[in-house]
Amino acid sequence: MSTKLIYFAWVRERIGKPEEDVELPAGIETVADLLRWLKSRGEEYEHALQYPDVIRVAINQEHVEHREKISGAREIALFPPMTGG
Amino acid sequence: MPGAVVPTVRIQAEDFDVAAEIIKMTQGRADIGAVVTFSGLCRDEAGRLAALELEHYPGMAEAEIGRIAAEAVARWPLQGLTAIHRHGRIAPGENIVLVVAASAHRQAAFEAANFLMDYLKSRAPFWKKEHHTDGSQGGWVEAKEADDEAASRWKQAVPKRN
Image 1 (cartoon, chains in turn brown, orange):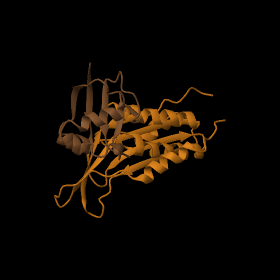
Image 2 (tube, helix red, strand yellow):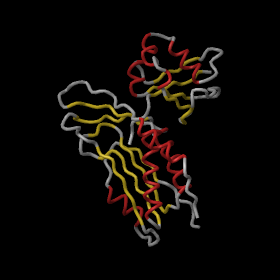
Image 3 (cartoon, chains in turn brown, purple):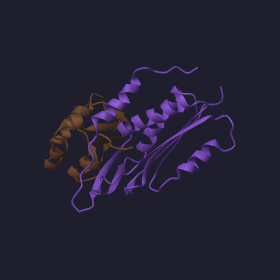
Image 4 (tube, chains in turn brown, purple):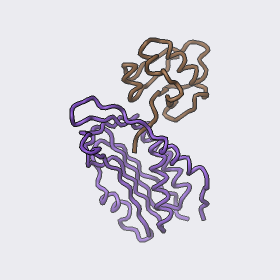
């Protein structure tokens, strides 16, 4: 099953695309696992996810912690801390 | 107790009219004793800033502000609650965000508006990018720790509804 990844703000700019569909390899169980795997996919991902602790994540459009399980996620969004308001 | 208030949440590129939003909330009713509005505007940063570009996460922006607004309605005895957030390019002097909270008495309206703004700043999926007047590449605005602290203070001291 493929998962839709969406990127915003400087995460989007550094990765160089607004979204993509990925096949997650076995063993990727949590958000932290996902970030570690993505970071290994190339220079642009390494640049975007250099400091994984600052990356905020939403699964199916709800905020989650990095320890959250990602099974069943249709849409996972990665973005910097928010600056609205 | 009357039926629960359903908050109005709008995410839009176009400007909003503060007075019109107050009228929409209060027209034809005589039970509202207090309306608090907060509008956030784009500053020019002493002439340095040409515009802000507001990126947002469509779908989640509405959903997240809706969740925050629902929490405000559960915590304070409100008679109306509206939150409007703009996206896209916004010039200095223009509106960015509006919160309107109505209640029988002022305290609930003040607190709910304050709560909504504090949470919106740290949880609503919007990101500001600066465009400079001298044409230089502006960067993404950095999140302030003070905004997270402002939101976290609402976790203490939960007011009880009557």
